[in-house]
Image 1: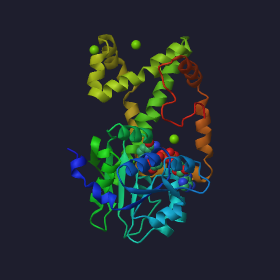
Image 2 (image 1 turned 45 degrees about the horizontal axis):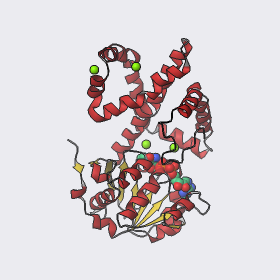
Image 3 (image 1 turned 180 degrees about the vertical axis):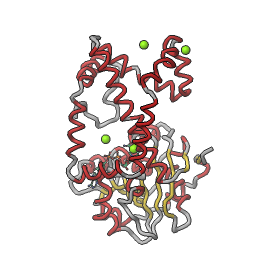
Length: 340
Ligand code: NAD
Ligand code: MG
Ligand code: MG
Ligand code: MG
Ligand code: MG
């Protein structure tokens, strides 16, 4: 059984005694900064001069400085800029201004696991990685709950890195839901695998293939959209509540029988072999290298794939249908702009 931590396992005063710099004010950054502030932590936000996030952070009453200034003031620097930006920002603004013995905290292990960032030996290096989008991390906290977190310590020269990690996790609400002890390597490899094979890559491709199969067979795109995309949420909600078993219990016997008969036909053993190949490319660094090299070149591959994805007919159908479905609140607490 994994080692789990809850609020009672953490001392909030540890993080309340530190000066914390949250670098970045995006999905995770805004949630961490606001939750820390509301937990009585001395927090400042570090952003580039021209950052569009500045106005948002200032509107919340947060102190915003340059990245260099925020780092120079901090005992704990929380790195919450995009993974592909971290290496360059670390070299240019963070490392040169990091106080002797100041700790570094990450929300995902990518740059440490793949060696893009090599912190000084005298710094504690921690991870508190929420297992959910930043906007939910904030919303749950405000509602008195939390999003589960993974905790890890890569370097512990102070001998107290775990106390700090647990205290931080408690301050952002993560230990209300529960924290699981892991390592940077396990978090990074499983996070990348989960999003590539199942959550983002696998689910998106499954939905698109299902939609294409029905439309190419002559069925109406609107009906295909409901069957292959819209209802997915309802099924996933049941899985979260009670596992795959609850989903099978709730659906009709017809659907459950079809699950057993056709699921392994669609997702056949080749898919598992493909998943193993994806995992191998994560572990050997090939995925990280491809991603970072493309980003360093101005992201031509990434941009082209994003544009191609947006052209898929399911997006047009979905856009029209969602406009007609009054009960779907697409505006809910997000900056997401449809089609952007
Ligand atoms: P994001 O893209 O939402 O946020 C980007 C923020 O970084 C913005 O405030 C932007 O102003 C700032 N930024 C971008 N480039 C910058 C630069 N050059 N200098 C200074 N600031 C810059 O990022 P995110 O999705 O919150 O990801 C942050 C970290 O959290 C990553 O390590 C990611 O893997 C991890 N994480 C994210 C989520 C999520 O919900 N998105 C979940 C778990 C972990
Ligand atoms: Mg994104
Ligand atoms: Mg991830
Ligand atoms: Mg049905
Ligand atoms: Mg049933």
